[in-house]
Length: 179
Image (cartoon, rainbow, N blue to C red; front, side, top):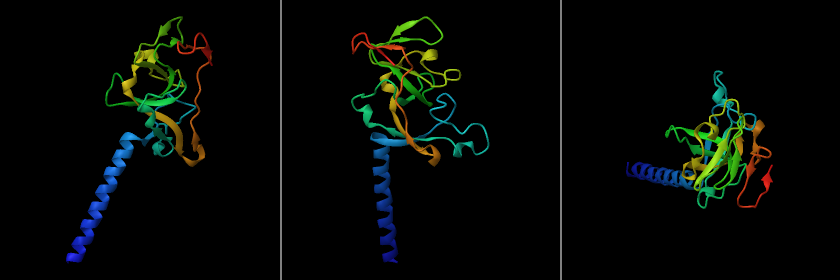
């Protein structure tokens, strides 16, 4: 009986240690997220509204190390907390960084992104709820950068970093327009 109790106690200790290590890694370094909604089509796919569609949704690998020094780049796909619904996480493309000038799609408006903020947009502009709707978001809302699709196997691979052409004027690099 003591031998069984000792084995159970050892198992519990190992499971708890694994859980603590797993939570620490997930919280600080990397994690996995599921794609929902069509705002990032065709770059990222959701499962749609069909039965068991969640099995077809992209499973995303998030790099959280970029949060340490805010080493994000224009064109990165990022995950962030919604500025309007704090319990909701959104996936969008980072278009502009602090002090950049950005043209707002569908208008003649040109905005400067305030210090400590960024401009995000979905790749599918027709259905995306993004900075065009709620404005620049604080950098503190960013959770991480999407680097890879890890599921389904047919879509396994790196998520491309790209920008809409001619939309951003960066203060950091003079008067160059990035495309």
